Amino acid sequence: MTIKEIYEAFDKIGSCTFATINGTYPETRIAHFLAYDEEGIYFSTMFTKPFYKQLIETKKVAVCGLCAETKVTEIDEENIYFEPGYFARINGDVKEVSIDELKAKDNPIFKYFIADKERYPAMVAFVLYRARGEIFDYDFEMENRENKVERVRFSYGGFSVEPAGLSITDKCINCGQCFNICSFKAIYKDDTKYSINGTRCDECGDCYLKCPVKAIIHKGE
Ligand code: SF4
Ligand code: SF4
Image 1 (cartoon, rainbow, N blue to C red):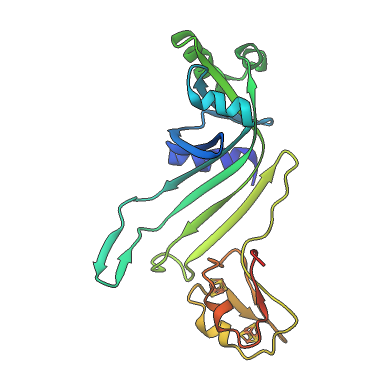
Image 2: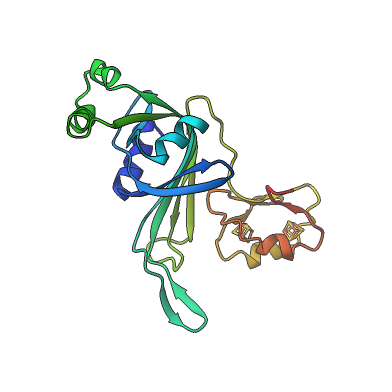
């Protein structure tokens, strides 16, 4: 995904949860991204807020948001319903950007920052210049497609990404039990062996627990 596509996925959500570390504990607040360019994705706060202090001290942030109806509907005592949607998450390194630097970019996308600085002189801008994350698109009842989950992982600014999903190793004896139990339709068989499509895998662990020869591994191992 390009930085523009990542920004647009968050922009569609609007308000997101921004997490920082305050000493030893994480803290969250609601904020939103405001702009992007080839350098990264931008947001603002006030230098008078703890958010600013934590950003300056750690130079890191994690952000997530949900693009869907947030209400979880109870269908019956054993089942709940999630309206199809996606959540987006991103984390990485931030640095402060002065308003003069934003003005020098001469990009209309930064007009809001510049106007906001005049409205609220304590306003400061940050750019998330190196990051990785994921768009996790879900349709658990398969109303609009034949599989429940589609995940896209991304990175920019020099970070790499680890593919999503569990993996099947050479210990596999081709019994097919994982294929039969995976309700996410993430397991497929080519001519000779079973494999997991990480973009469809929820990492639910059903196949891991079912495999009789421990041929499936997860990222925590
Ligand atoms: S359950 Fe285990 S052994 Fe059987 S096909 Fe799947 S990975 Fe292979
Ligand atoms: S972890 Fe869950 S979703 Fe992923 S392949 Fe195994 S059973 Fe399917």
